[in-house]
Image (cartoon, rainbow, N blue to C red; front, side):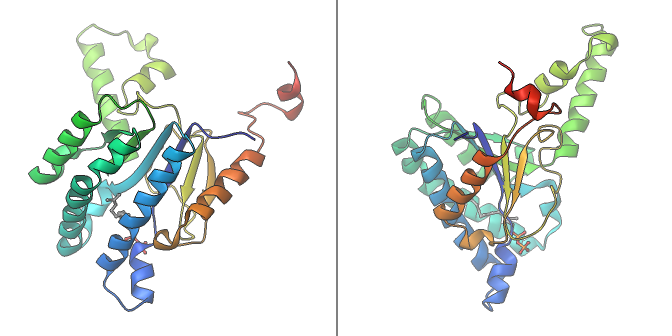
Length: 239
Ligand code: FPP
């Protein structure tokens, strides 16, 4: 069965899950962080080469200040606590997004975690933090314009490979499978360029209830899909 090389997850539904249980939204995030840990460990165990988690979007900054502060605190705490988990599972940590917008404490722990896990040779775990697809495409366009203005690049030479190489995801293959939990069927400014041929699994389960069994169901459904990349089934069967 086909296994995805790169799995990316939009972890949605923490707030609604907590509200349905008459708790504050942050309770859902605490539970969500536990689920993230178990999904990370399971992906490492079954040797998924690349896992990306959409942990905080450029739009999430507009949430109530208390919730944003709590998410920053949670990120900082979890990264500090789970460093041993990353080492034990041979996971290399990376980030994409406007990390400089995060509080100093988060930036420090992010830098340290990248550094400490640098030599790990197993799964590459990428956190998308303060990440937005439109933002990274805008930054890439600015860089292309700068290079063309400086005479380092000809406009006619800009191709898909140039664009991909100037995005912060240049170290990642495009995601084969994107999972979004909690029943919403949209991409929400995640991996706009990279998702061109991703298979997308929208699952009803809210993130705090997402189990490793749900992960395996999503992987099994992915394995049954025929990926044609614009071609026909008959062409795919040709040697
Ligand atoms: C979406 O649920 C979740 C987030 C905006 C934050 C994701 C954060 C975590 C899972 C916890 C921290 C993670 C790690 C890995 C340390 P939502 O709040 O949008 O839910 P709603 O759609 O029900 O409001």
